[in-house]
Length: 66
Image (cartoon, rainbow, N blue to C red; front, side, top):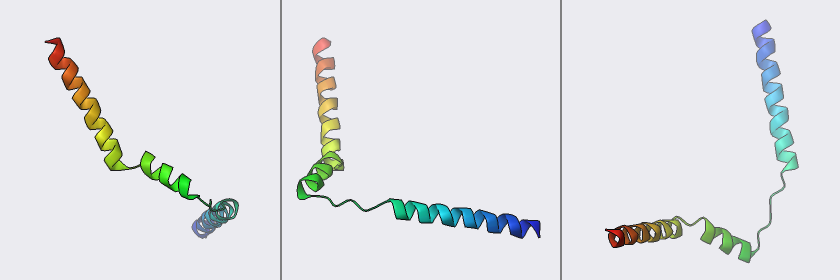
């Protein structure tokens, strides 16, 4: 009987937390400029290109110093 009470209490707490999170979080409306800025900032291809540029600079500096 105690196990059922513990499980029921846990489920009630989880359900109330889920409801609270749902009620307090309103979806954000994004403008086109915000969408484009987010896409550029989080684009994997852009990040990969920046890393490749950094690697090339390090390799250049290393080759120059030897």
